Length: 142
Image (cartoon, rainbow, N blue to C red; front, side, top):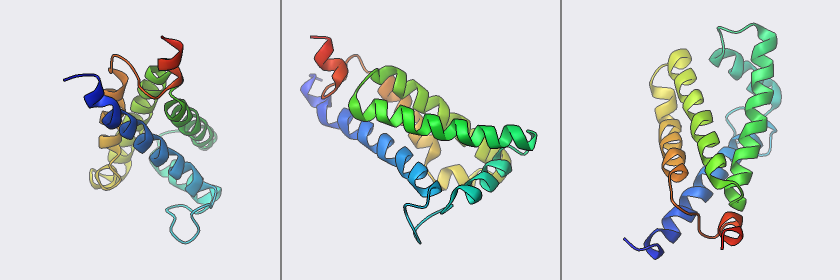
């Protein structure tokens, strides 16, 4: 397989993971309106408390803020192609944590319905690519 054969699939995977994660953030701030899972921050905090039932409430709320921060940071890194490998590993581990938490708290169906396992696997696949085309990383490595 030549490098040219992976340009589009790699870019598509970066964009798909990024847009998916940013969409979840947009949802918790009410940007999706009636087509939302949470629709507002309060509902997202309630959902986070379900996933982190084993934590004290203050740590659960902290985890909601922390997850949101990383759900913005890693997708932006992937979109720009800046420190892409770090962004991909970060997204992979974050989505893996979500998938495991959802499975424990809500059962196996929830992370399957939202393709969280697939997103995590895709991010890890992206993380092991030898180079990143259409990226800041590619421009600075020439």
